[in-house]
Picture (cartoon, helix red, strand yellow):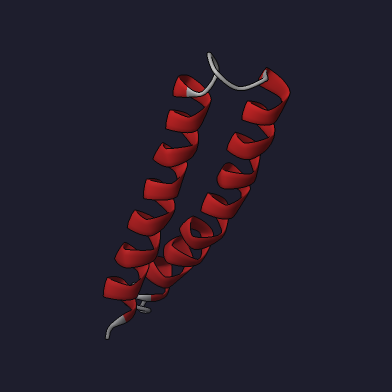
Length: 67
């Protein structure tokens, strides 16, 4: 697999987790205590940041080094 494909997969995976965190915060606010909602959403956001950062690094690695 090339670096570009790995980068795209990692960024997409991170974006999916990020959307899941936003959905948790938006929908569970009515039934869960707010402190628990923010904790779970915050943990998901922290988990989502890691694959996004590594995916961007893989995508930048693919650039042609020249002039």
